[in-house]
Amino acid sequence: MFVIERNNYPIISTISNKKLWERKEKDFEIIVAFGKNYEKTVKIHKELLIAQSEYFEGMFRSGMKETITNTLKIVDFDFKTVNSAVQFFYGQQIPDSTSIKEMFELLRFADKYFIEHLRDYITTFIFLRLTPANVVEISNAIVSSNFAMKLREHCSDFLVACFDEKLEVKNIDILNEEFTVELAKNI
Image (cartoon, rainbow, N blue to C red; front, side, top):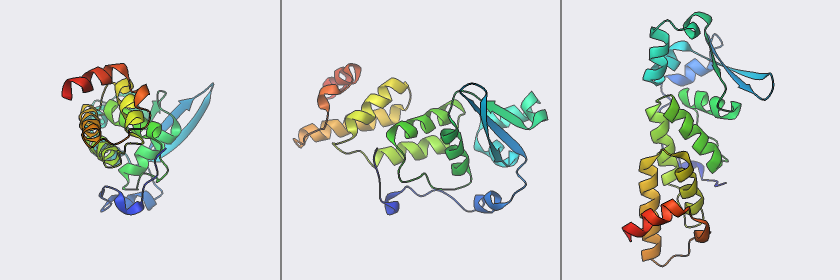
């Protein structure tokens, strides 16, 4: 886990969404199913969800069953990930204590649902926090995720810079083999 100073966050817009967050009459439910028959619900304004991505806009404009029932069931993400994404949509900050694993789950969520501003935010969030102590963990997470190519390039460049400056990189011996081969080409 990496903890950051509040004043180091990338800035996100909170102009119009804060008032929406405070209003109670949210008209759409995201049901997060996990385990055996366990579900938790996150409520959101349908128009805000539509504004987040072409995926959601297409879902609502196509007349899919989610449009009629005003619910979307998600089974491939945990509640914390979905709830964090919804809070982000309303302009709330990503919590200080968010782990690398949780960040990559949010990144995977953003990738699946084509939420560019969340993907860009998390990429920037992680990039600004690269250190010799966490770059291997982040690089390994990138390789196993098969997306986040921009972040992958940042990690590669960061590792090259660490080597050039002769900085000790924590856990370099467990750097993913595929990433190591790729890195060797850049040195």
